[in-house]
Length: 276
Ligand code: KIV
Image 1 (cartoon, protein in one colour):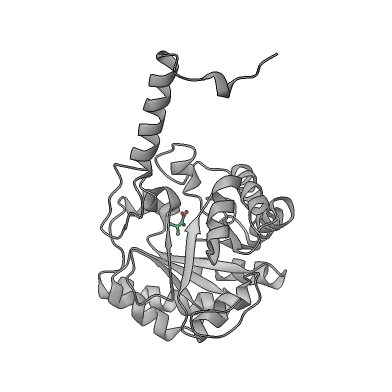
Image 2 (cartoon, helix red, strand yellow):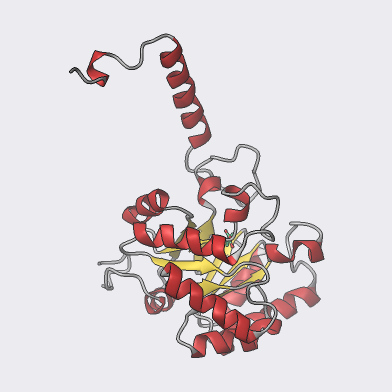
């Protein structure tokens, strides 16, 4: 496939492709998906990476945080997505408490995600504290994406979803964490809700790609939650979100029209039924 920069790359996106895109100065596009149909649409539209995020806990299961979703839930969502994808790289979040206890347990969780769900890579939140875990998983042949800045699995520690690393000390720690994750073998890192200048600095100081959400244009790629960018969640409007559609209105109108047609006996008409 020919890219915007005129280079060619194999049609299937791999972790190597992603790293090469940074080297070639091509921005990386990533969106979340949690089911077969959505994954098929996004993949066929040409997205580079599909993230089966633990945001499934919020947008699919209706929980307030990402804490309750289980590894079995994430394996189910990931297997649905994988069946819908031909080209994109599929990365699955390891959920809260499936990798924090010991590196051995983390490897078992990551292994299940690859073998049972068919994921191409896993993502984990955290910096210095997870580097030995990252090494163990990467050594077993499983690619790992890191996640720094706002890490929603730690919401009860932070207490808020506000922008992280505005203070110099936390910003310096984040840069150090990014370098440690690269050293440990991560092929890429998500930077969530941090100042744009800091994200740009991190992106310049490491050779693996950064994927930003609420982290500005200096990142090597961008990610959004699909429900948010399609305008399915009317009540969620953070500053970083750009809505590309108003699917909430489209769906509401369609359902209202259907109800009206059923009640008025307009649906089904003679062409929408079978004769004997
Ligand atoms: O779970 C998720 O959707 C994520 C993205 C916001 C990066 O981790």
